[in-house]
Structure formats: C-alpha cells, structure tokens
Length: 357
Image (tube, rainbow, N blue to C red; front, side, top):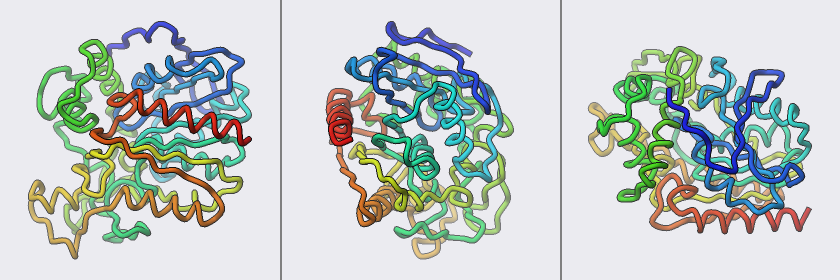
C-alpha cells in the first residue's frame, strides 16, 4: 500500500488510546484551540491536508484516520453499534491527547460520526461543522423526513449495496482509469466533473481511497439475502452496515444539551448525499440503473438532504442554531473543489463560536 508523506507543515503520528492505535495528522501551534477534522467513507485524513495548512495560528488542526481507513490500527467494526465504534474511538483519542473542548468538522460519513459524538458528549464541542454530511437515518432503505424504513429488514442498505467490482478493485489498490475503480469514482462522484485535483494530489487521494481496508469486518461488510427488492439486507459487521438505518439512527441529535452552533455546508451538485443520490437504490431503480424496481410507491427515493434539514430544524426548535450554506457548482467535496469558499465559511463559523463562548 502506498503512503505518500504528508505535505510540509503536517506531522504524522500514531496515538495509543484505550481502544486502538489511531493515526493522526496535526498542524499548527500546540497552544492553539483544537479543531478536529473527520473524513468520509472510502477516504482518509489525506483529504484534509490543504485545509489544515490554511488554518490560522489560533488553531491546532487534528485529523485522525477513522477505524478501517488509512494507517489506524485495523480493528473490525461492529455494525450493530451503528457509528458508535467511530464515535467512541474519537472520544478515546480526545482523552489520550488531553483535549477538553474542541471544534469538530466532519465530512460525509464523518458527519454521522460527529452527530453521534455530540449525542454522547455534547459538552465537549465548541462548534460543529457538517460538510455534505450523511443522513441522520443512515444510507439507503428509508423514506420520508422521519426516516421511516421501506421494509422491516431494511433491504437496500448495508454491505450488499456496494458495487462488488468497485470493492474488488479497491481491495487490489487499483490506480487505473477503470470506470469502476477508485480514480474514476472519485472524479465522477466525489467531485463535480470536470473538476480534477492537481496530478500530484490526485495520486494522493487515490492512495487515500485505497487505504480503505477491504476485508471481513471492514469495507463493505457482510450482507443478508432479502425477499424484498433489491434482494439484499444488512449484515452485522463492517462499514456499510454501520451506516445502515437498521443500526444508525441519529435523530436524537436534535435533543442534545448543550447545543453547540452548527454550520452545514454542502455542494449544490452532490451526487452522493442527495435527494436523488446515485448511491441510493430507490433513485437507481427509478432511472433504470438497477432492474426490477417495484416503483416509487413500493420503493421511494431516500430524501437524504431533506432528512438532514429536518433533524437540524428540530435542533433549532429545541433551542439550537444552525446555518445551511450551499456552494454552487460543487459536488460532494467542497473542501477540495471550492477550498477558498469553504475555508471562508468554516473560519467565520469558528470565530463566531469562539466569540460567543
């Protein structure tokens, strides 16, 4: 596996914790206010490097590799706990580093981990920034704004929903232009075409994707056959099962106390977390990409963005505050695609939170 050195100004270290050894990138003065950055699925902390280096000296940037990704110790994921393995890992890391309070910035799957962390440890957070965050009701298998399951067995979510060819190529560390491989997937879905990272950073990002551990207990996870379309239901271990609505339900975020200020940033043209997601079987069936779709009444599209907004609206109704910022002409990764606009929004939020504390 290729592990290119981090960009100059970023330090790499392994941090022993009470749960596992966590690989962490850090930058900025040790006296700075901690800002922790969480990455998404099929990625690692490498996607945060430019953002970390752009942080003012008032902040100490910290970006861990989540369990199952990057160079963090390979300990299997118990999907029946939802995203709690990752949330508990983060708490163990924070304790090991001696951090009492911090700002939390979380992208995609990391957004779900951040919401779980806030539910379990609300007093730790000075602010929360969600970047193209996953639905609070998990990925696949639900409909309406309350996350109602389409079927009792949550068919259409979990480990069986991953493209097997993509998983195979990912496990082999593929670096080709294969349309099913990591590079093509990143350029088609992580970013809004025709955007591409610089050649050097693209290679780093491909390595980051390939650092995802493909094995039992990791990506994508096991599956259970289902009599319901599309024929697969969640198993009990691994990454995609952990974000299945069978185990992942973050609606309780709306009721946390205290309530840190929340900034929700998303790309206007995100194809991954979307009300018309190209990774949701309801939408894929609707457009004819998966055969046998039983129709919109039997298997509707998951309104992922609307579900996030509904929970955040409940957060506001309970006394919290959030701001939704949409970045135009941008896909799933504003941190990479629109870095200047993204950083401006992020830093304004952090400064406002610090001033209000």
